[in-house]
Image (cartoon, rainbow, N blue to C red; front, side):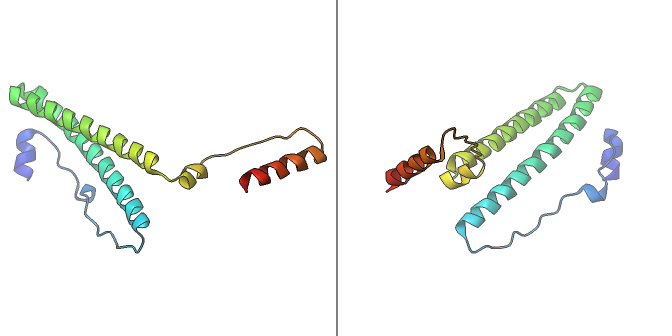
Length: 134
């Protein structure tokens, strides 16, 4: 590995920056599983995008130094892959928001209401609301 990095004029990543895969524990609920899968996939997207950005920066240095057309082709491919990964991440987040139940969507909603009137008028309004719900 050292020979490759020396020949490319690059410094290898330290061992502690290598990502290891972890086993995702099983869950009883399908909704919990879907939420965990979403978070796991989202975290993987972040990792891929970060590592891809690092690889792009390093490959740009190689392309500049070598001025070889193939190196620039690789840079172009990495850029397209990163753009696609970012689009997929945004698409995944949009789908999660669209698929959220009304209860999940309402959790983020805050309503501040102010009633101006007498207690008697407020009681009439509340009574009308209760009758509409029945």
